[in-house]
Length: 209
Length: 209
Image (cartoon, rainbow over all chains, first blue to last red):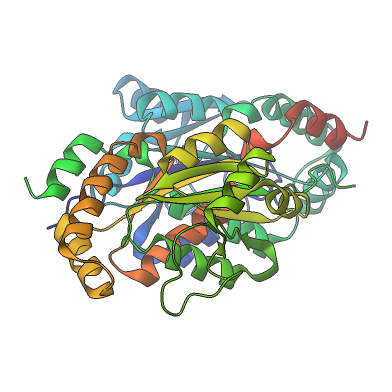
């Protein structure tokens, strides 16, 4: 008898650009194989060098994006730094039905929307660097940002960090491998959250009724 | 600069006798080495074959136990199946100050007491078998329980299971190695809980103030 059917869970990963949240989430997701699903966002921003459509993002035009919003295609969407980003409902629900851990790499607004839509199955992690200078250095190394855009990103970073108390976990990405272990721990634990289950039903089944 | 000093956390593991909670917690604790501390309880119950004083429990007389209660020595204590069990404050606080994950193998009453004493740093896991018959079989295999004592333990099991909603996680110990991975994930995540930190202070430090 299996009184506790596996249901999926959602792990929201947020944090400033340059915090390494995407690399961390992708690395954990890859290690977990079949058990996890990394949700690919749809965006209107320009493809960066090395990025692949359907792997890094689904790259679409502003017109297509606005039509998808109208069609109710997105679980959440947001405009960040002048570009649109969105998460499609369909793929997430499919992965959840398969009992997977769904990683969502979204911003603080997206987190609020997802938590409202799935209050019982969401676990959230805010990823950041150990200090501001480390974040600035990482953005400079990226080479795609000028001084002005780095300044904008720092203002946004501090704005986002004010929302840390809304997150379940705060992860300092200083040592990548250590941070990966922590995120993997969070992801595994998300599957056995009490809030995911109907406990009365579980106890009845457990007794053999 | 280290804006997020490591502070310890507490992982409460509860569950019916025979659920395997103690073996699981000890196995995870051993794997984590220096990072974890398995709190050894004090008890008045008779030593079972193979048990070692100071390893499995601190075995004391009823008189000693009652004196310790009077001296405020215990964080929590309880009478279960006619025997006393207690958790000493001193060792826990020492381990927490060293940034360790403290495992407490205690019952549902103990969980309530510990959560009240340390609301921000407690994570709790309820461990049980996949169904009632599996629990009965495990108790029978133990060989130390007669039919009557098994019946008492089953009544207690169901009584404790009503408290599952007060726990953060529900862990079915069906496959020991898998259950161990989940408990390890929970333990790691407990260290980075947002509730452990003063976020305003963290942000100020992060900015370099």
